[in-house]
Image 1 (cartoon, rainbow, N blue to C red):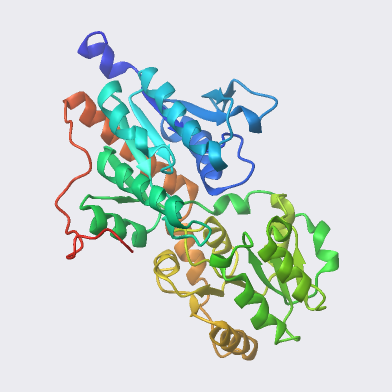
Image 2 (tube, rainbow, N blue to C red; image 1 turned 180 degrees about the vertical axis):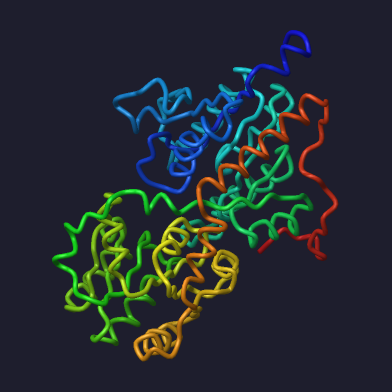
Length: 397
């Protein structure tokens, strides 16, 4: 390692694992990694970044991205291969003698206790959005996801949640401290608006953008708008990806005031659609700080959000909340009549203060530097313990 003087002048070596890679194509983790890499040269010039990527997603494999080194594994980052992908990425990073590994998600958490002891790297894990709560996971799969969350929480040197509601869950369930660092949303403002898709849309529409999954309450949203032909809805999502989505589009897609569009990945087109929307509807009931919500807060004065702890934490209780179809319908009617609203500029003020990528990146880099300082000081403990556990001793939500 050299003398203490040489250690003080060398760059901090940070590895980021668990995402598909960069440049980001789609997904919250990919957007996070892309923004960390883009902002690092200005905000953290003392850091040397290495990002682990899925070779399957990048036929043309660049060696670097904004100065960050790229390493590729011949596995998919999502689905059944996500566990070996994350484990092999962690092994490669630790054996490369990096100082800190930022692990995104808990797919490979079973390996964290081993590589924490073998490699000497500080391991920081973003536990994501309580994935085990999603309806698609049942039985053994849900149990494995809960086990992975527990291993990550107890054996990482530091734990990150993207939402105060998740951070409270980690503290209460596992008795360890947890940093809250959200996602940014101001990247949605960056491109020039492209009005190419606006010609087919009506004036004064409501907007929702999400994966078409039950926990995003898509049925509730379309049913509320189906009963109000005077209020157009544009709902963008992957309708063809599941029986759930196909059935909903078959049932409601013939209504002339409902525009159930396939995914749009062009940020310029999305910006134009967002700018013209009258208000935004967010139905997510799981997943922490949803990227789609913090992006919407950059644009929309009025946001109607499903009433859950995640969304209340993200909007600081400032959105208009609904729990069922009737609640949502009443809010839509009140907005039309001008009797309800979030307050001019309230969502944008929160977004600028909490969900700008420069703010998020500084929080990540500050935590990484703290981990490095503890490593050099010989501090070996993990997350601070001693937070209250559930009184019944059962780790459940």
